[in-house]
Every structure is written in C-alpha cells, then in structure tokens.
Length: 282
Image 1 (cartoon, rainbow, N blue to C red):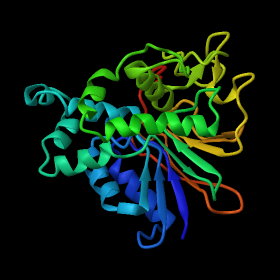
Image 2: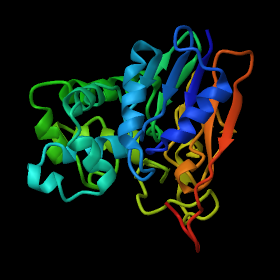
Image 3: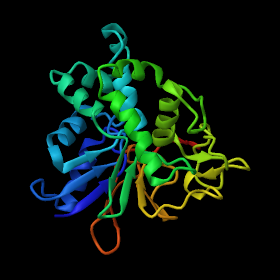
C-alpha cells in the first residue's frame, strides 16, 4: 500500500506510464498524489486526464495554474475555445469533456495527510500562513469552484493583484490572492508579496526576494510540504519542503516521491524530450 507524490506532468502521458511501471504501481493498493499541472505543453493532455481520472480514489490531485487555465478556457464561447492550442482543443472537444472537466474542477487546491505529516500543494504557501490558515484559504476557493457560480470565479481569477494575501482581503481579491499563492508562487519578499516575474533557480532572483520556503520570520509548520511548479528549482529537499517538478516537458525528468517509508525517497525517469535552446526559463 505505497503512497507516491508525482511532479508536474503537463501532458507527458508516455513518461507518466513509464514512471508508473518503474514504481510497480498497483491501482488496487497504491495511492498517487499529483501536484497539479496535469495538462498543457506535452502533447498528451487528454490521455493524462483520462488516466488520472480513471484511478478514482487512488489518485489525489491538487490544481495547478495550467489546470485552472484550462477550466477558465472551457467557460469561453465555442469559437474562442477553438482558437487555443491543439493539445487543449483535444480536451475541450472530446466526447468525455464534461466528465473530465467536472472532475478537474472539483479537485482540491491543497491536500493534507496528518498521519503521514505531509501537505500537497502545487506552488507554495504564504510565509505568514499556519497550516490551519492555508487549509481554510484553500477551502474557500474550492467551495466556489464546486458551486453553481464557479464560472464567475474562473472568469475573474486572473491577475497579479493583489500580490499579497492578507486576512483583510474580501471577495474576488481574497480568492484570487489565495489562488496566486497556491498555484503561482516561487519568490516573495518578507511581507509575502509575490514576485511573478522571477522564475529562475535560487540565486538568480533580485535582492530582497526569497524562495517562498526561506522567507525570514515565516511561520514554522509541523508538517512537510510536497510541491511542484518550479522546474528551474527541480528536485529539492530542505526546510521541510520536497519539490518535485523535474521539468519533464522540457527534457528533464518526471519525479515521484515515496511518502510512506521511514524516509521520503525520490524515484524518477528521464524525459526523452528535447531541451529548449538558449537560456530558457519557464
């Protein structure tokens, strides 16, 4: 009864199948945690969605920014949906589109297993959040996404403001700030203001910015965090954080982390996709 977390797949279905084979994954016994961004860029998003959705309770998946973007596009007119890239069009015009998108829309933004002492998010946490505050903020958004007015949130969630979560925020600003923290954060300042334009590896950021898990004075949490989203950070372990976005879609690796052993164990397969040329940064 193994439990594994798997990093950003981004439509890389073939690599996912290879990784599951390497893990000897048993869908009758084992559980997979997916850290979001199931879709976009890898060319096989429809196959990935179908596979993960078919696993039922054996798959726990949090939403990533690419997943939310797909859901937002699905709220547009059919003519506008037809203008997106072929990979997402394949999902949007699939015969089982409604089943897949309804399933995706009801995924959480944050998952906690207190027995394992692990939390799963796509990107990061606000430095002032306690575990309880993070969970409460995520549940506020999830409730709206699962409700009859989900289309309103999906149409209004995009934007870089507010760039800092505070308890004083209300309405769509509060929900947007939560989404930005949980699905877009890499760097922020000591007050928790997100630096959206900073996407490189630690050490490349502007002065006064910190990786979200290294902010001075941040709340200390008694739970380990598994996250993805940050391909230039790659495989990382430290400060109670396990980062597992290996940049598979960019020719890196698809990473799994075994969660239920005495010590977490990284397991990965190499991607055969070409690496982008030049000084590429996602």
